Length: 116
View 1 (cartoon, rainbow, N blue to C red):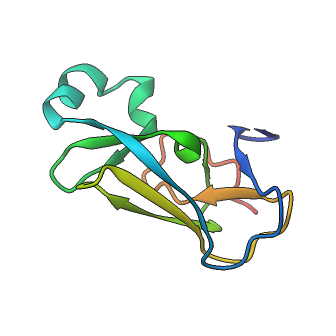
View 2 (spheres, helix red, strand yellow):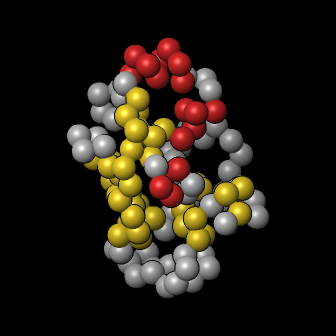
View 3 (spheres, rainbow, N blue to C red):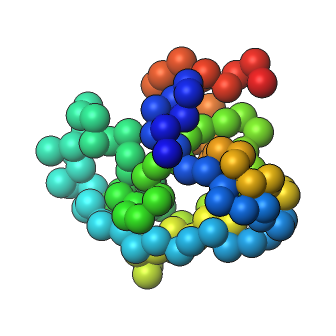
């Protein structure tokens, strides 16, 4: 679905309880040296999740469609060994609400949800 302010987004099809697993998504691993040589400073880098060893993961499924919020209603855990990211609700979500994750404090875009 399309978010009014932020482009594509993920929306709840029904009410979701706190702590519900939304999806565990497989990822494509991008080794650090390949990221540095081919992906850095491209649009591609905006969709990658960090691994502790410097590698990056590209989340498949709905994983790359969540928009950012300073008060997200979805939390995620990166399992870089398995190459999987699991998304769970961090609060109750009503049907039709957009699902948000927190991208971090160093955003590369204007935060359309900043004043919400």
